Length: 127
Image 1 (spheres, rainbow, N blue to C red):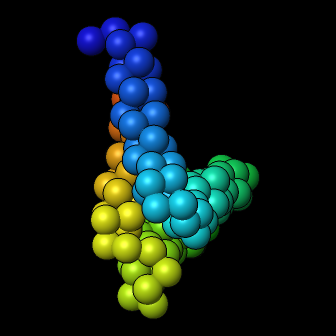
Image 2: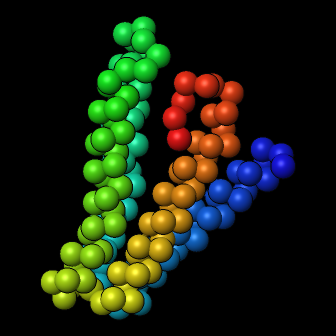
């Protein structure tokens, strides 16, 4: 499989995930579940910062990478928790929450797929 086919496939799944999130908001004219998109933008930031810190201290496996993974996992869980909490308090419906969670799975799956396909040359990267 060529790199162009991988990029096209990842872009397709990413756009379907974002479409599901927008549909979860637009179908019921309730835009509260759009806050999930903020977690997509913020989630990779701790990994970027902490991986740069670990490369500067000269060690291959640094605790700063683990701190970055921890904060990234907090944002990922928050991305799934926001629709659940909004459904629990009655702000959005179960259908809207399920569309948002399925869209979130597709977006996070795209991010993991990108890291898997395009960071294989470096043995020090984690998925």
